[in-house]
Amino acid sequence: MKNIRNIIYVFLAFSLLYACEEVEREPVVVLGDAPVLSAPQAGTQLVFQKVNANDESVTFSWSTADFGFPSAITYKLQVDSAGNNFATPMDLVNTSELTTTISHATLNEKLLTFGLETNKPTDVEFRVEATVNPGVQSLYSEAVDMTLTLYASTFPPIYMIGAVVGGWDPSKAVEIVSTGEPYEYITVCNFDPSAGVNFRFFSSPDWGASLGGYDVFTTYPTDLLEPATGDSDPNFNFIGTAGWYEIKVNADTKVIEMTPVAKPEMFLTGDATHGWNWDDPVTELQYKTYKTWEGDVDFTQGGAFRLFAQKDWGPTSYGYDVVVNYNTDYIDIMEGHSDPNWEFLKSSGTYHVVVNLRTNTIEISE
Image (cartoon, rainbow, N blue to C red; front, side):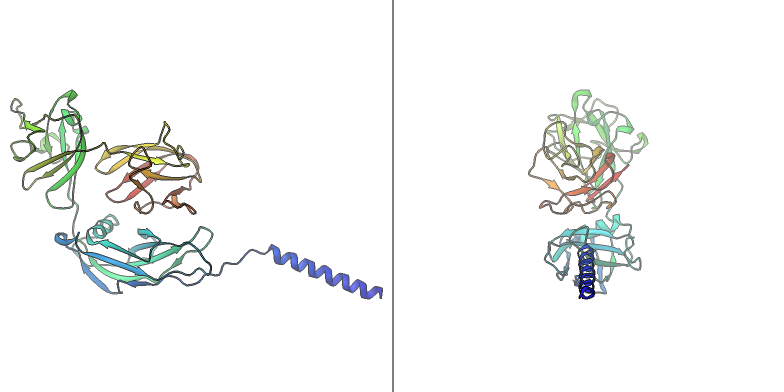
C-alpha cells in the first residue's frame, strides 16, 4: 500500500511540474492572411504628363489582412525599384482604409525624391504592409510590378536679394522655389522695410546672376511694389505694410503676384518634447524656405509628438498620416493613440529636425 501511495505522489509531482511548465511558456502568435494588392493590375504601364498630372490619379486597393485575432490594422503602401526586394522601400501612404488614391502629380513628385529617372520607362514594385503593434510581425502583400514614366517637375529656384528681404548680401538671398511648372516660382517671405525697401530678382545667389526687377517683370501689384527709379539698378521698392507675403513669380509671362499671409510656423508638441500643452517655452522650428522648417529639438525617448502649424491644437496638425517619409530608426507610429502621433525611439537628447511639407518628409539627425 505504501508503495502505491509513493507512486501516486510521484505521478502528481510530475503532473504539477508539467502544468507549471505549460503556464510559463510564451504565447505563440499565429499569423493569418496577408493583404492582397488587387489594383492596379500587375504589369500596368503609365506615362505621367505634366499637363494633366493633377487631374489624373492612380487608385490602389487591397483586401483586409487577418492576424488571427481582432485588431486595429494600419496599412502602409510602399514602393521600391524592381528587383530590390524592398530592401529600401519608400512609404507612400499610412491609412486604416482599404484603398487610397494618389494623383499623378503627387506620385511623380514622390518618386522623383526617391531617385527615379525622368522621361524613360522605369520598373517599380508596390506592396502593402499591414501592422497592428510592434509585438506582432507585419504581414506583407505580394509585390505588384508597374512601369512608370515620370516627367521632370523640378526646376532650379530663383532668388530675391535686397534690403527689404534680409539685406543686400548674397548669403541672405531668399529662395523662391519652382512650383513644378516651367517658369513658375513661389515662396513666403517677410518684407521688413525697417532697413530699406528695395530688392530685385536673381537666378542664383550671386551679383552676376541678376534677373532684373521692373525692367523685366512688367506686371506686379502696384499697391505693394513700385520702380525704384532713384537706384542705378532696376530694383523694386516695397511700399506695402510690413509683414509676411506669399509671392508668385512667372518668369515667362513676367508677372508677380503677392498676397499677405500669416507667418509660416511649425511646432512639435507632445510628451516627447515639451509636453501636451502650449505653455512657454514651446518647441518651435524656424522657417527656412517655402514649406520647410528646421531646428534643434530636445526629445524624450518613448514619448509621443505631432506637428502643428500654429501655437494651438487647431486647425492644422500633421502626423504620420500626412508626413509619410521618415526614418523608423528615430520615430515610428505610436500605437494606441487615436491621433496620428509618432513615438520617439532613440535615446533622450538633442537632435536636429528638418520638416519639408513639399516632400512630406521629416528628417531627424544627431
